[in-house]
Amino acid sequence: MFSDFEFILLFLVNILITLGFFIFAVIYFFIEAGNATRLTGKKTVLTSALICAAAVINALLTRYAVTFPKVDGFDMNSDFTFITNIISALIGFFIYICYIRTGQGLAPYGRLPGSLLIGERNGPIRINWKLILTPLPLLIIWTFAWFSIFPPEPTELAYATNPEGDNLMSYVYIFFTASILAPIQEEIMYRHFAMGLLAKWFGDSKLAVALNIGLSAFLFSIAHVGVVTEDWIKIVQIMPAGLVFGIVNKQEGLEHSILSHSLFNTAVIPITMLLEYIMGI
Image 1 (cartoon, helix red, strand yellow):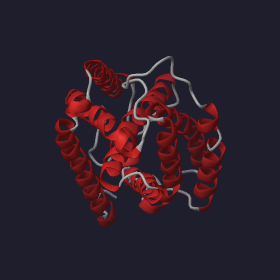
Image 2 (image 1 turned 90 degrees about the vertical axis):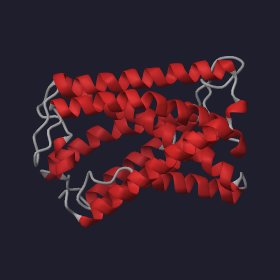
Image 3 (image 1 turned 180 degrees about the vertical axis):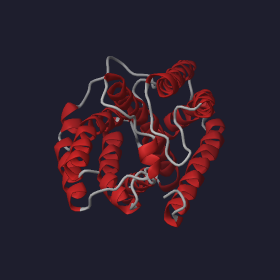
């Protein structure tokens, strides 16, 4: 329920984490400004504009193309939600400029690759498919096994934000949100920026790298509270994925962690739907 004390507490913690991230992003944006090049700045603005456009498209799909259930007075199809989503998308343009640019400036402190698209490079980007695909089956098996042992019960919030009906637009919306938009936004925040910030604070020793990956994965897990009634079930399920994305980001950079996250979400969605069907959730 929305009034559950544990959910409210974790939700407030999540807000504080997000607010703290943004404050540090703004502070270090100016501190690390000297490391930026004109080319990097242009790429950052373009990337943020594309994310903003994707968020606007998501808001339009939410309002006009997909039907959501009304749960406890919460209506994803309402004009209020639509306006809120549009405003969030526009504000997000400036927020992601901070996250992307600052994360790129902080990356050298932890010897992180950063963003290969944003940074200056020689030649095309080479995708390390082995690094991306090798842990994917293990994460899928873990998710299936964990949810089989501890079946998740969706919260009212989860019901309210999941499309109704078995139609093409519902699947398009789910894919666009979970496999494209969410991985991009979350990896920029929890890997590209957060790992750069933690590297700035703790350095790049082996212990610091392990702490960096673990802490960023934990913060990433906390961001997923509120979708099941027992939050610890979701946190434990998603934590290994956060660790993998952190390792991928450490070795190959932002684009690789986004791709890894996207493939994981794309694979897990049908598994989750299958479990819901089998267990009658």
